[in-house]
Amino acid sequence: MNFDLPPELLALQESVRRLARDKVKPRAREIDETGEYPSDLFEAFGAAGLLGLCIPEEYGGSGGGILGLTIAIEEVAKYSNTAALMLLLTRLPTGPVMIAGSEELKRRYLPDIAEGSRRAAFGLSEPGAGSDVVGMRTRATADPDVPGGFVLNGVKCWMSGVAQADWYTVFAKTGEPASRKHDAITAFVVERAFEGVSVGRLDDKMGVRGVDTGELVLEDVHVPPENVIGEVGGFRLAMLGLNSMRPIVAARGIGLAEGALMYATEYVKARPAFGGTISDLQGIRWEIAKLAVDIEAARLLTYRAAGLADEGRFTREWVPYLSMAKYHATEVAVRASGLAVQLLGAAGYMKDHPTELWYRDARQLTIVEGTSQVQLDLIARGVLDHHLWWD
Image 1 (cartoon, rainbow, N blue to C red):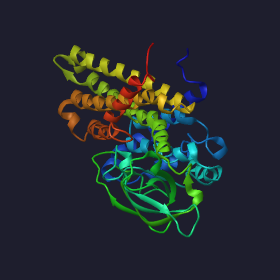
Image 2: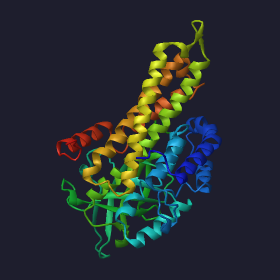
Image 3: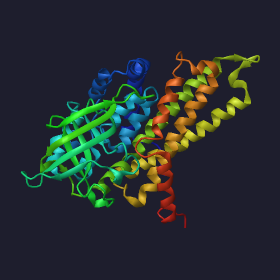
């Protein structure tokens, strides 16, 4: 069993590491303070071929897969989770299209994402339907004038990249609004230019500023039949899309944890205290050691999960392995950011250092795309159903 990355992924890792140091690191604090979308980083990612990492070559991507995107995001997230989110958004909305979209839909929407000429966002959550996906109220009714077409009405919320996107993957009820049946939900590609589509309120976020999060408002939006993703009744597609995203979100956590620990370690090595440095204290050294173990465990879980997802193993029986990666890596990010602040003491609480930025950004990761509690429940179901079993 070989745990080393193949040469092409090692080369990708090194190139993204250089780009992150040169381009992302100097911009991280400014992006957070201004909240402005970093178009320069988006262009740099495009020039480096990173926007098409997860998109197959036949649709204009580089075919690096979920593992390739995971590796790239890990490097970028060491300095900015906003920049890492920009890369994540090349896969979250395109995932359902790649999994279940028609050939026409793939050729119409994927190449533009890969080349960076268009951007997309993902609409699943609503004010009363976050983790409870089937509680959504956005409605898709049959278009009386276009056979196979639909008319969408509703509001999606907490959509990352909503203001920058040119099109959206939107899930809506094609059955009764109150129905909790899985076949009552369907996915659609909705163009920003469609009549009745508008961006509503933008959120004032605690962290991960710079990529707008907010509402997508749909008012009598006519969607043609060719923009239906897969079969009518797409709850399973929503779950497959999210399952395959677990390692990508986990990578944001690993990168943040690595960045925070590396920064705090250099600080305690240089900070005089008690006739030596802070790093000479056994209690400090042990905390560093424990976190290093957690980071490496998270990396192994995440790389395995990415490999499984690239093999198409993101159906129900593989969910525990995917959820483990997301759960552990994002919780490690929270612990790492907290420890980094603590190791710097009062200095860590100040904006003179990036530790408080990591601390704020980390909190998002245990919530988005399935909270830690949802992941624990999915893992437990896997054990109870013997999908995760050791006999």
